Length: 244
Image 1 (tube, rainbow, N blue to C red):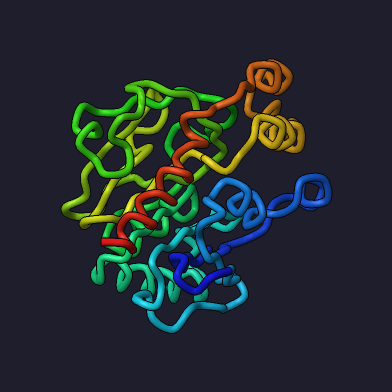
Image 2: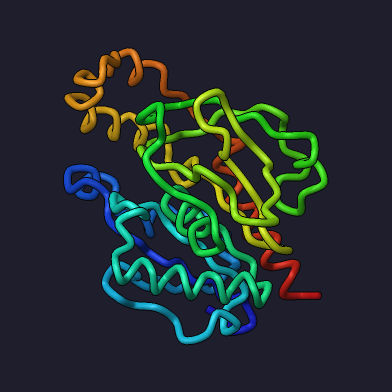
């Protein structure tokens, strides 16, 4: 990859279920498929203690999901949170997804914990607030779009100064921006519909125990192109920021 290409780091904060990893690969691979090939991308395993030296060494940062829980405050997670806080302070374009969304909020003074209504999974609708139309990342997206979701924990309160961009009936904090160019999204733009169905298949016993119809949820999964397109949008933002 040409060194003139913007440098983006993926902070990998965990791994998917073994059965899903065997069939579809792991979190970082899903992001690599959807981020622009015009980026020079490196992967650091934050869960294993790997972190880049300086956030300013990078033109963009993506933080993956994880089966871990932010509220457990594992040492590796707290170190990653401190690093992210530096990245936001230094205005490095950052996108946190699911665990990454929660970790970003926690790093900047928000509250993260188990959602009082329990798990949210499957293909769900996201509503954007009117202010999202003026956002550098979300501007021009439909006011309502489908997205893939699976989470038990949520951002219970946003960090000071954060701008809420999206919500739905289950989750009031589906998307936010903090600072000039750092975003958190609770939904999964890296998931395909087949990966979402595979998740629900693995989760089926737990879903049934929670009184949910897992097969109906699997049948209701559909493609979510607007949500998936967010990674291309972020790629474009990083590339344009690099060339300014």
